[in-house]
Length: 328
Picture 1: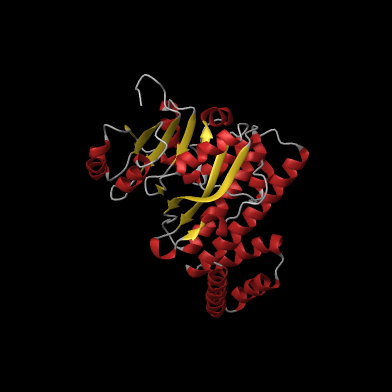
Picture 2: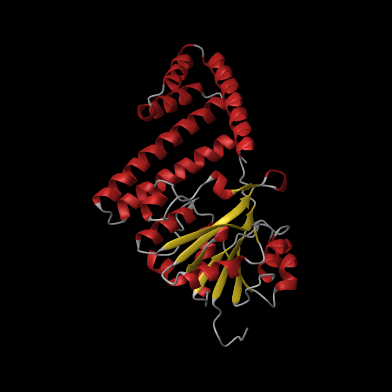
């Protein structure tokens, strides 16, 4: 590709503490059958910078490398977007990989449907021993409109996204104030500002899907992030009456899920007083007899209640996993 002519696609790769994985990521980018792209790697103040720079040294003549102080993934992506020369942006985290035809397949969608502003696809998530299709866990049903994204009828895995840069700029880039789920917030605003989104069910990437912390903590943090994002969306976007009602409902649901999951976590931490308060507040929304009994039990015999709830959770998780395996 000529250095005088801008590439069609700018590939955005935030890098943080993935020195041992980034070679696989870059190899998958450079192996693309579609070659009209530039790859921009942003070292987001990574604690393994020395190892990272050794790992990417063989690739420096084929990538744009930027170092910055830590701004989290949203800040790293924004830095790369501002540097990007492509008409389209493609996103890939440094611990994820693409199949060789990913960019070619996504660009074909734009050719076949010129009105599209953004496309995504299915991908594999999890470690090698427990990989599953993203769309089996987080399905996409119907058109990915703003409302569909709010209620998560459509969910978008970021390693598969290719989008017109103009659509991201119009929506205001990634929100660097968000601690997590900044990609979800970005797609919501992109759709709200008029971007037409399409998708394919083809497998085109592999995402590690791994996040630190226990499952309970992950659920709690995710629900909290969605609650925060819904509050922000309700406050900052000029929503229609129906959109506002949908966002408010989703905000209430997300907050209730956060309180429930955080209550479970506090129960595991043996903070029975806080667990009881959180579960009681969550049940104002859910109104479930089981939660009411848990709250009552925590007031009478907290240790015994914890053991009963822990056993019930293990059984529920086991049954859920068995059902998922049968359906996969």
